[in-house]
Image: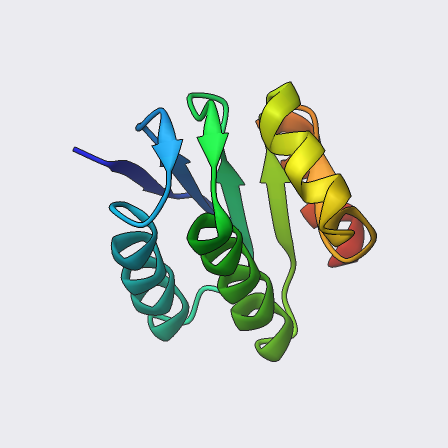
Length: 116
C-alpha cells in the first residue's frame, strides 16, 4: 500500500507510506489527489514523514495538490518533511508557495485558521 487516506471533519489526510516519492509513486498520488478533490474535498494535508526522497515527479504531484485545493478555495498543507525533501522544496523555491507545517496537528490548525 502506497498511501493511507483518511477523511476528517474539515480535511482529508493523505500519508505517503513509501520512502521515495518518485516516478513510480507520483502518478498514483496525482490520481488519488484528483479523486479526493473530485469528491468535493477542499482541504488536503499531505504527510511525507515516511518519505526520505522526492524527485521532480514528486514535486509535480505536490503542486497538483496545491493547485486543486486553491481552485476549490481550500487549503493544502505539506507536513512531515525530512531534511532532504525540505532542502529540495527550498531549492525549488516552493517553500514560498506551499503551506508547510512540522506536524499533522499543526497542519490541522493551519487549515482551521485559514478557513475562519
